[in-house]
Image 1 (cartoon, helix red, strand yellow):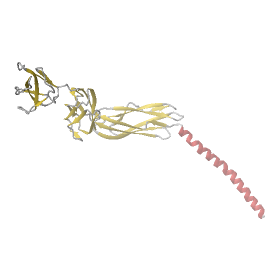
Image 2 (tube, rainbow, N blue to C red):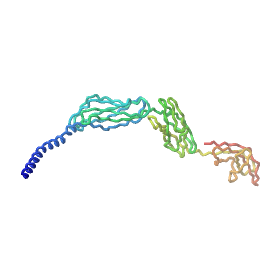
Image 3 (cartoon, rainbow, N blue to C red):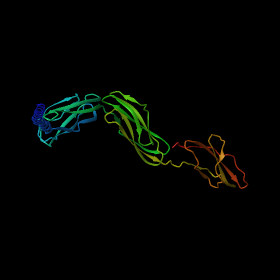
Image 4 (cartoon, helix red, strand yellow):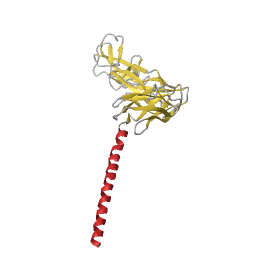
Length: 327
């Protein structure tokens, strides 16, 4: 009797096991099939974030986001919403139907009403597996920095000397802070700015550009001003020509001293009435002399003496003055 009892128990367990197997199998099949209909509808964005960068206050900039149905069944975008007062939808009526593998363009617009950084988002609700799609955006409202004139031409400047011209920086629509400046050519220097500097709305400041050519020929470059302006860096175009210094000299001439004179000596000094130093290396038989050893920006005084055949030298002649230009 005990053996039969165990046998019956084993038979019962076998029957119960066979009954539970189909239930487990059916549940597994349902779990495997459940995501299939959801995967058939999937809405994707490209890109899913966008930075508009700097945009002038009051202006508008648009951008298009690509929306794609990567599933195997058509889906519908049923509603749209956005966050952020500076952002708006372009023309995009809903509902909109997107076939499998197809795409549509979502136009979005940034219109800053004030200067500064701001963020926002666009949200779409659809029949996709994940019904809510959010696109994050950001942008900065900014004012322009104007420069006048927009180009400076220094013309011809002697190598080694300097010439300066002035430009004006204006914050016509809103306050602008200039944080740094630079010249792209070392022959041009930016003068007169202590940075950082803030230009109040509606006001201007002057800036001086200096050109000091280091060699002959045409030079060009840019003065660049980095700021929080929409057009930063603001650029001033610069041109100038280095000119080789002209050779400077003093040409002297005098009346002949009379019979018996065989030549003349020429003396030079830097003070009226001397002292004087002879500058001709040999007795000059003519009545003219060119002094090409002069220095720019110096005033010289000249006298001559006559010499006879016996080597006797006369007193100094009358004195003449010559002023050499600085450039």
